[in-house]
Image (cartoon, rainbow, N blue to C red):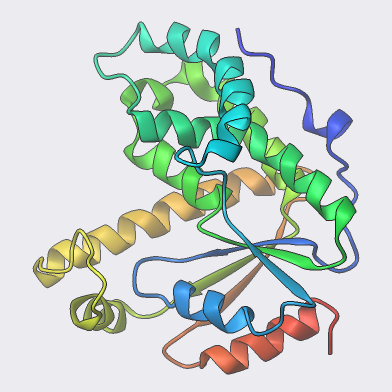
Length: 240
């Protein structure tokens, strides 16, 4: 059985007066990449970060340590299912298991706010919604609850970007970057967007049950420009 360290004992649960670890979330087309790039204009105050990369040699020790830690528990759960984790899904579960400890060390070494694009909330939503069925079973609930506690103690703030479906549909269709639903009919796209929103709501509801969970700020990117959101966040981060 995997030995998940209790978040309250190893990761401080006292919330900072100003956020130190922040994640950007939102459905496709909401403007996460645009905001992420806009925040890069403030390198002294904001440190942009992303999760460990399984293709990067420097991150290999991370995946060996935290991936191997998960193997016994995942194997026990897998015996009840017909589909095993893909290589990418196993990497994501390893990240969810070990990344909070990496971030906590980073916070101690820098004075910047660490902003994550598609971080743990995204990964938790992806795995709970689209992962193997055995990870949605009652037998897997203990694993998920510990991961929720761990990340609720690590994240200080979540910035949720969104807009009405009609705006997101148009953005997905017209942007150069490819997407799995870019050429799909509107009803398919709307259901895709709704499914992600439900998954995010599920994760945030789980955080709400944890003491000292992250604060959530919501922005409608059809009404607020990236510069306006950046100005708001700089105030929230204590920089203006």
